[in-house]
Image (cartoon, rainbow over all chains, first blue to last red; front, side):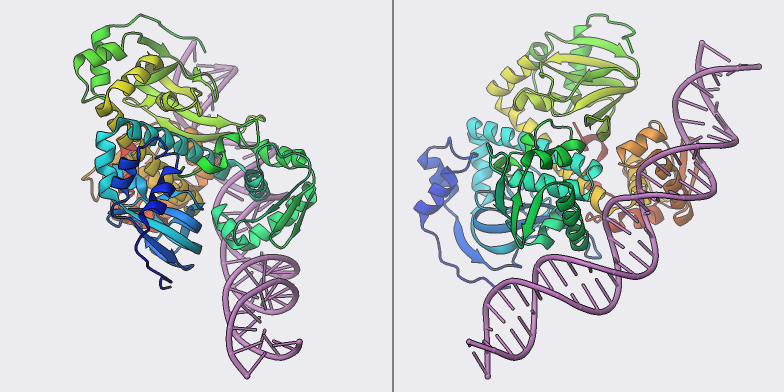
Length: 254
Length: 254
DNA sequence: CGAAGAGTTGAAACAGGTCAATCTACGTGG
DNA sequence: CCACGTAGATTGACCTGTTTCAACTCTTCG
């Protein structure tokens, strides 16, 4: 549960990482430099908690590699997984706008390199930079829309359909017919991400195999007929296309 | 399904309504006047559809009285209710920031007076008014947090707990011990709002009566022991208090 | 008074959850 | 290189919560 390394930061690397984010892509170099002035790069092992729900939000995080689970937890330890994010996503940045408390907990679930940044500079910069503010507003609006879809999925799709929908979101735009893909993290984790137990996931996947033409070997999934899969999964979804409004990179924190 | 009346707008009334919203409270009179220049006030009966998912979002709406259901719907007619809003809420304003399509459908479910406003002016004003933009950003962040709670509730609370949580959100801050309240709309509608069938609602309410000390007569609910109700309902919730982060007026569209 | 809609109740079906046992893959250390 | 231990994954048996369908009651409103 301890950090592997803690080397203080190669500034240029951090700034170029920030520049690559939709949120900061329009910012000039000086701004990036300002935002990154208190940045720290750390490598964390699986299990590392970045912060917990209602902690004071003095920092926000950029995932360089690995996976981070966003969740909430009741007193008795039951947890609701909100999302699971990978490289290129920001975590905890929305707290800057609220009461300075994180609205959820965050835990590393696959060894990750994380850039930790100070919330203060972001707060200041947002206030003096309307362009940045507008970008942030658009990103939040998109996230909100994605969350609305999430609520829809949870309430009307059954387990096999939710898995099918998850698989579809792993395909690349333009894919059709025969597709081979690789599950990005543990099946247990996918299960919690989709709001079901590991056992249910296993059984639902089996049912999905029977209903649509897919093959599963370990973490490799072969979709033989993309259309059949989307017919099955998206029947219980308001969006016409395979969840187009949940385009991968924007589903959570662009 | 037709409108009752369509009298064009008493400008001052509209502007004072706008002024009362958290989103516009900081705006000077000129701004309100600008935003309201194409406003229309209409009274709609139950069943009136304001707009549907993926329609072009050229207008947004302010509820003056009545209730409006926000939902999404699959091809076969199954619907997922996202929220149900009353007086003082905006509907469809978030589309201004996105691709100009409504992210959901909206239907009047209790006779309502609605102020319809043109999206264009809001779009223009947001771009030249950083204060308004910041307010909007904060409101969106709060809504996002509320939606995160919604996802948590759907995934880990059972039917009686969801009802209990709903009742708690109807209480006023400062209430304690003995509280009497009135269900704001049909039980069937509450059921769909909470993601369950009317029959399930009825049975779950019965169970809730047994577990905590509440009495139900028609639309009137008497909570004899607020603490007991929140102990029961909030056990499966990450928030310490009775859902404090879902403060009524901000749960959806301040 | 009667029709229509809302609400409740019962019986049966079903989806998922829980618990326990087993199986598999993989990295470690002998 | 093999044996072992561990964590992930699967399976079966059973249980619980929710849905579905159908019947019935209650309220409301013309």
